Length: 416
Image (cartoon, rainbow, N blue to C red; front, top):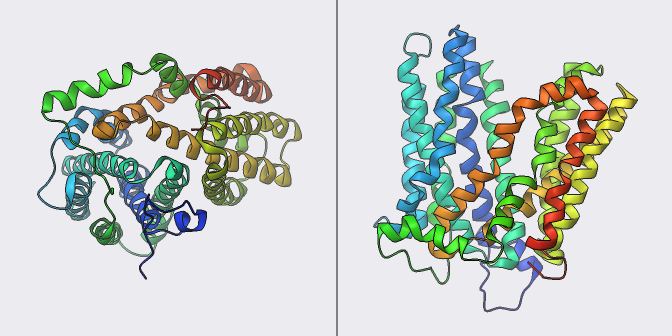
């Protein structure tokens, strides 16, 4: 069924925006973006462990994820050059999707125990095409959606991404109990191929931005453009700090659940499965609320809810192994986190100049993960020496500087 598109010249309609062809495409391409990640991460390591690959080799395979961290290095190429079909954004998305299908098929035909380095090469190809697809999809979504639709569109993209990860993680592991691992990867390659029609049929921006005139401009002008804006350094500080509290807390959720007495089954059903759908609901609710609140006010409201939800884990630490308490806290935290992520992703997209979306967005999203990588290593030490209550109070307090920066980077009275 073909859904109606939204023309920017029409009066704004919430229903027309939510149930538009562009939003359907955003959701499907979010799924396409999320599907490959676990296929070279947790799911691949599960396959390798299942067939008896040495743990040292399995650990080294974490390095195949480097393209996700370094993707900003080649993002200017996607701003500067356009394939001869489907335009500057969708053309690159299609190339990456076809590359992913072929790389997954190649990976499916390798044997991790007897040819681990061929598997590593295939996984590195998947990571490269996946990271490049992320660049192109993020840029396409920003170019396509007007500012008033960025919030809901970002929420749909994030939720589609999470469903893709669910398919590549939980579904793939379940299938592996019933069919050979190589058949699982053939199924995942087929799932990736099913995303190709979404790219071909997806709409393009009504007024495409003019691409950079040269590769030099594509490389350097995104930085010049960004740092010319007022408060550029404050915005960078905000990007680093806004999600830091709940990111650090989430590093220790599983050890925390086990230590206070929950069984692995309870953790799987309540904290993981129930929590997943609570996060999906939070993203959708946040996206809808952003139509009313705008991006700036949503950052205030959802950011405060994020901090309070982290603090609730200190209450759960006092309660001990209460399943109703776990369900309530997990539901609140995942709802708040889903809303906060939707607002934050929309805010990052709103910062991008449409000429340099691929480069600027790739850089900003790379910065977003820096605090978790650097400070995440200290979370075990902090939990051990502060105790669980103190640890979650600490995680709440480190969220405060990010909230205070909202006064400068996203004032309540200025609609975003």
